[in-house]
Amino acid sequence: MEIYVVQNGDTVDGIGTMFSVSPESVIWNNQLVYPYELAVGQALLVGEFDGTAAPERRKAGGYAYTYISRWVLEQTLPFLNRLFVFSYGFTTSGDIIDPPRDDSWMIRMSLEQRVIPILTLTPLGQDGKFNNNLIHEVIINETVTDRLLMNLVSLMQEKGYGGIDIDFEYILAGDRDFFTSFVQRTVEIMHSYGFTVSVALAPKTSADQKGLLYEGKDYAAIGAAADEALLMTYEWGYKYGPPMAVAPLNMVRRVVEYAVSEIDNSKINLGIANYGYDWPLPFVRGETAAKTIGNIEAVRIAIQYGAQIRFDELSRSPYFNYTDEEGTEHVVWYEDARSLQGKYGLMDEYRLNGIGVWQIMRWYRAMWLLFFSGREG
Image (cartoon, rainbow, N blue to C red):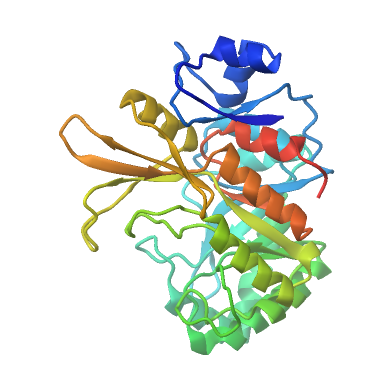
């Protein structure tokens, strides 16, 4: 499949003729809606997909909340090896906190599609944010750790989960070795019951990188213990931060280069962002909050306001500016076929295990068609 960037005067019919494909395939690949308007600068995925997702050939996992649309999950599962259900919590005594909605239907659909459901464990506090004090209380106490893990084993056996994903963020620097020991103990117990263990890792670029996101995670030790590791290579541009690419390729590359120096590349999954942000301008730190949007939604906004989509070569990411009905200026950064192609190429270059998509709540067909039409990793 090829990527074509829309020029002035282009139409769906004309692009179909140009590439000797049906207009219907252009519409389908790119989720165009009637009357099939295009934005100048929009990246289109053009070509006929042969229909063989073949997850055995390229590995892909996706994170989903329990309130995901059934239709979106049905569309996505044929492209996945694993579904990461987000998320289960826990207390300081090792009791498990269920997600807000039932997950049994997601597990059942996954197993029907021969996709392995993975329980995602997160230390979320009452405010819904990552709680490093909760992490601390559990990982420093071996008795509580073992109680939590055995509770998880019972739940996973009962529900049909095939593995666990540890997504602990903002770990205190002083808890670094305790967290490593927690991962090692989790692997020991989970393996004895036939479960796999993966760990989500903040996007470090060096062993001694400062910051609450980074200091509590030992890439080498965790990578040696776990079956797989996900690099969370996104959120450079984030809701409360200054406008920029969500997952700039130049920064993603730096993370991968460091990760493969510490962890076996066959264990590493590259994090892929499936969203963008719309910032009102001017940006004021502490006041401005961007709106999270889907990649398809971003293009529709550009069409609605007649904005021209541009492409930043350093970050390999699309963006555009527009002015809304109230006269407020906006800038939007998102992901498209070009930006994803760069990340998939990086995965191939370093022969990583696969990708992990955060998150699959919005259906973005081109992301999957492009991934599975690429060469084998």
